[in-house]
Length: 242
Image (cartoon, rainbow, N blue to C red; front, side, top):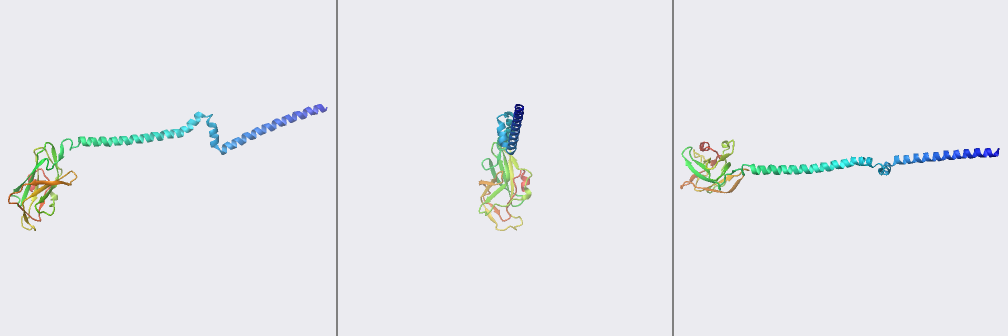
């Protein structure tokens, strides 16, 4: 009888121990899960060794981002290079295909001959002629700066004479400017006889450049006063005088 009771107690004790062990394992798992939830980075690092493809994929997001960033940076560099190359290419085309390098240059004293001729009509006028003596077509930009003997300033230009396009001279061609020397009715002031003249050309930026080209005047000189003015460079002498 006592032996039977002992065996039953032993079996119950063993079952109780098993149940206790099971509860302990369950609690340990629950505690670990709680720790994982509270520290996901640790959980991820712990899983990284096992889940290599997943980690690569996850870091693939940052890796993809890194790749995209690298691609974007590379793309930016490439775009900049292309842009610079485009500008250089355009500049090169501009310099190679520009009018200057393809045969058209600015008209200056180096590639032209300038003469001055007095006219009977209109009164008190001078006709300037610029002949292209070079081998390339040249542009007569703007209007001439007239530097008469003892003149204090460059005379103004008649704005109404401005042409619609820059006067262009092929080799051997001439362009013209009309100069009003003095008022026909004598209303001008400060008149005197000038015996020397220099003509200064404008460049494409409409700046006057150089020291000027000496132009021969009649031996007796020309009478100028405060009404002195010039026209723009024009292709037709009649337009310059009118």
